[in-house]
Image (cartoon, rainbow, N blue to C red):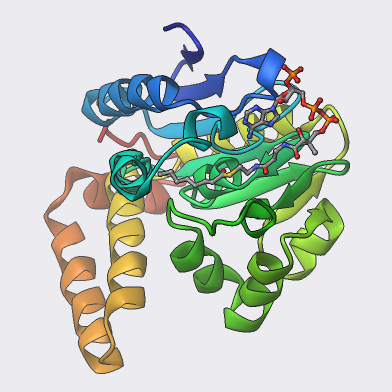
Amino acid sequence: MGQIVLKQEGAIAVLSVDRPEALNALSRELVDEMDLLVERVRKDPEIRCLILHSEKNFAAGADIKDMADCDEEAAKAFVFSPTYDKIEELPIPVIAAIEGYALGGGMELAMTADIRIAEKSAKMGFPEVTLGIMPGAGGTIRVPRVTGEAAAKELIFTGDIISAEKAAAIGLVNRISEDGEVLRDAMKLAEKLCRRGPIALAAAKRTIRAGQEEPDWKRGIQIEAENWAKLFNTEDQKEGMKAFLEKRKPEFQNR
Ligand code: CO8
């Protein structure tokens, strides 16, 4: 216990792995702990943005020592996905701020975020095939979604560890920060998102996801129109538009 930490600064929560001796590799116990903290974030209406960030290394993958002796049954029991799905489904923006290595199950954790920022010298990749396995916590699903299939296949098939610059070029990260600045930049972005309407942000997040999963684009457009119209039931819509007309900044409610 105690290898994962949740800190809160106002409306922003920062979830960090604290296992420097193993480059923040993710053990099963650690992910169990993470699950409880993610649940806490989900239930706390004061939290409007979550940042995933760990000092020095984001996470060098799932713990290889934990997995080395698994057979198929034990591997089936070795699940990170429910926790990762919970993060992706949080009704608030999630930002991954990546320092050092983000590999395998570590990069899959970063893929649950809505926005990824990497520092200049960060190193990312999916080295699973070099260990005789493949990504197993959403990598084969979430990576092609953001990079397109061809870039995802190159990354996952080669197991290459790539630079922040290459990651940005294929859309794996949104942007690059100077070394040592990534958490500061993520906080700045989070502060901006916290000033936006939280109910509208949650609806936009839900609608973008629904659109990606909806094979019929006309149905996607319809879902968008329905979700858009529902926002006119909210105080935030009244406040946002009133504030615009009164030439002042809006004060949105907690989610
Ligand atoms: N698991 C366990 N220990 C690790 C891991 C890891 N993933 N990564 C690093 N460590 C440990 C090392 O064993 C070492 O420990 P010790 O000091 O006790 O020997 C310590 O961290 C420092 O590591 P290195 O000495 O290797 O540091 P280097 O700077 O020389 O190398 C690397 C850094 C390149 C990051 C190297 O450590 C490395 O290659 N690590 C493994 C990376 C990897 O292959 N990650 C993918 C793991 S598989 C995976 O994530 C599958 C996900 C599927 C999830 C599905 C779950 C259901």
